[in-house]
Amino acid sequence: MFEYKDLTQLHVELSSMCNAACPGCPRNICGGYTVPSFNEKQMSLELFKSIINNDILKNITRILFCGNYGDPITCKDIIEILKYCSSVNPDIHIIIHTNGSLRTIKFWKEIASTNNNRLEIIFSIDGLEDTNKIYRRNTNWNKLIENVNAYINAGGVAIWEYLAFKHNEHQINEAKLLSSKLGFKQFRLKKAFGFENNGQMKVVDNIGRYQYTIYPPTNKSITNISAKPTTQIDKIDVPPSHIKKNKNAITYTEYTEISCLAKNGKEIYIDVEGGIHPCCFLGHVSVDSPGSINDQYRQFSTNFNTKISIKDVLSDNSYFNKIEESWSETHTGNRIMMCSKMCSTKRNQLDDLYANDNKPNKKHKF
Picture (cartoon, rainbow, N blue to C red):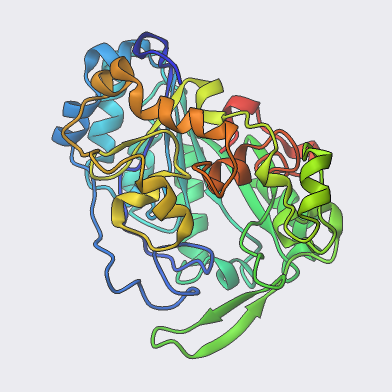
């Protein structure tokens, strides 16, 4: 993929704990009860330092604190981790994703002063007081606004990211006005994933009883391709000979060229236990998630564990190289479906993530 000396970006999962229960999150069942086998964990300052030492931090230009399962703000050592990063590399750009309805005013004032304006916090707010809770379940609007005010008024740089759904698309302009009033640096409109199941997202309560359904926006310009019908097969990059022989089994992902976001950005993903992965989309195997995509990826990571250092992984490179070599095959071979889904050069979900006038700098795409 790339060499250790070329590593410039890190994506780190500080916690797998969260106060919310978003229906699209893999830590819970349809916004209801937590997956029974799921173990909540958080990364300590000690573990963080053992994985990301001074030599690594000095060469890193950006760290993203997001992850697959939790909210980074739930990590009890997050302030100390931020201070450590800034002390080693004052120029490092740090980005944190959060739902914003956690912790105290004192905490938010303190976190605003940890990184000399090189810290950006992205608040995931999907609507206004009456609609944000429909997807961001279990969050508290009043607490959220209190925290946002404390952080911004203390000098913190904040970005509002807004997932568009049918239930909140009518509030987009009003939310933009509120973001400006509150002092957000930018308002970004995002196209939601999670609608592969017949274009809808079922929501259940804590014991699995159906509550309601979330639908994609009626405005197709703010709808992610994951919510669009796949009855018309996209034959981009598929050899004519294959189409002729397999007319009923063609998908654009089988042959499309892969342009790996992690490889291009010289970035790796570190899960909450310290496991090292090419990217966050493949990082969820650390909790033994079921499914064919995860089983397929595990063939590359059977001997992988948290005791291997970043330097060892990238110096050896055989682990990541095996994944890259698989891109020349099809899914019936070793090609990883997640790579095709997220990093194909044509029609991938990441390129369709933001509305046209809301795209961040490409290297800060997550």
